[in-house]
Image (cartoon, rainbow, N blue to C red; front, side, top):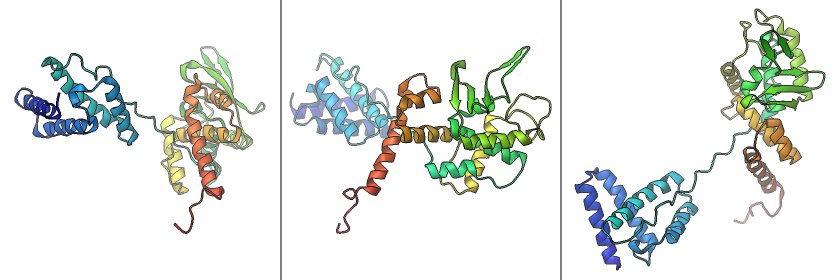
Length: 312
């Protein structure tokens, strides 16, 4: 098949889309642009002669230019329809795009605070009050032990086994550890740092001022009820804004910061996996990318051959 014949087939296909499928002018223009691009990428081969292997290379080439996977998927959809029409016209025997998928969209890296901002966020409080002590203890514990906010607010003041009420989610100050009930009702024990222990003891000393009907929750609201995940989210965001921390801070960001900073310091991904409560190592490995970013930044700042020459 010649290049002219290939161009004629594309024109005929677009006419079919217009006359039979009644596509809008905008959609037709998109199809035309996608097929024109395919013809250019296929050079020196006519489009109709392309194999699955060649089309996979073309897809990889698009991905290599930084094109969004969603845009690649749309192009493949346009091209797949054209090849299906060629099959119906008996110009080719199989659709070479059948089963070929766009590259998966890479998952965004978790957002983590730098060590200085994280320390500033959890250590600074503006006033002395039960609420301020509660905030300090919650923020310190989130960062110290990498808890999910749901795990944080479910903590009790101690292990409880009273009739129908059973709880094994609590902080053991003497052993410097927190007993957590995480996803899937899985339990784990995580160390608690000295700063978090100090903040927890300060909060527990004033907790009685807010204690009302339910004696079990470790963290209480001003009304004496168990702290909610939403209220923790609002408090930590407002606190970060008051400190001019340039990030949309949320509780899970402290969990990410905990994981990234422990991994940067220790390099022990298995330990981080266990402390986070991840069932698979793959979920923890995303923090190695943050670790690499940190190392690359240190390299850029410190290595004499990484710095840009003043002559350029």
